[in-house]
Image (tube, rainbow, N blue to C red):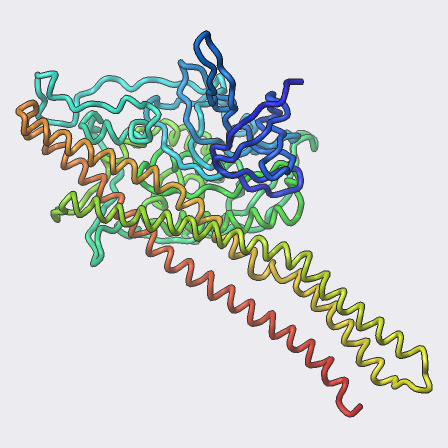
Length: 559
């Protein structure tokens, strides 16, 4: 067994069962054994809690010494060698102890050979690891470089000094997403582009053009299934899009496949993370119900998004019921070229002029808003989670103790019948039972309100955590515009080339503003519904409590 090691958390992870512990970003940790088991470390956080947490969420602190000095270096747990790309954000937490169908080899519905274009893997955000995934270690996944093609620009300079400097940090989301290459004109135009997404000007700024055929989708009937004579067990969901009415059956791994295709394709769109996996108790009834509720919210967000809902891979996910056709569509989606930087070529933007400085200020305002909202959503999540804990434990126990005490008083009164009132004894005893029932009502109530609030807050945490990376793309584009204009002013670049960079920066800016507008529109709808639903359930709950108390009160009438 390896010796204990110190580590630092690079992402926040929220435990969901007794085997796991929560860790906070930048928190110092102790790892009991550097050899992770199925992607999980066992260790201790700064609060003295011991348990499991994902290895990809932490960096091991190593002591390094030489003849002159001794210093500390931090290495990502499970990081790849120098010849491989390491994406500094964790994968979904793995499942120790399970032969999980969610992570199997797709043996029952694919040939397990996938081609992935190098250099333009989708960016992804960070919270609880629902995004940027490191390159696959699967030997059946092959990477191929794109063939050299002509630049977008119709004007190119023969002077080497005219080339705007590239970002040397290849791990930067600006570089990895391909947006840098797009802005600089290094993304080749396609001869044929079958898809197109339009940004239009609205009263408050750019908007995504609405989907011509809006639809919704239900997720129902989570059913435990087995295969290989019961060796593997998984949950199947009935997924029914409204515009076809024909159900298809999907497992979690199918949702995960769709999620990763969306991340890979849509560079400047916030794709919320999927509901988390769970290390233990994967088939417990409460967990299955929670995952279904959160998948429903995730799906509602997908279908309501004017761009994501039109994705061909999404349509394939919703409609394909034939195994053979599924394999063909899956391979086609994975080999699609209009992803990442190439997705930017599909955008049609308005002709209206926007001052880039005004755009930058608008984006800075949204950045401050998103940071504040993210903090407040996390705070509300913490408070609501604590309130759930009290409902299930403290409130129930206190009301039961109060009820038991009333029952004890009633029993004491009954010990001296000549001087006691049977009606009073019954009333006091009934009051005790009422408070015991109220304790049970408190324990059951989170299923009606707080759980649903936490589901919605989880969705928005997964949305908000993406925006820093997306905004970074725009910031990088702004920097290239300023650099190219400086070079043009100094005579080191043709003005036409600088104008091309500015034009492509406008495309990135319009897309980001459209995504910001959609976020605000959906936020108002979602939080209005969330608050109305919570207050409605709270009122109904306390009305039931009042009815219970009134029945007890009436028993004292006429005594």
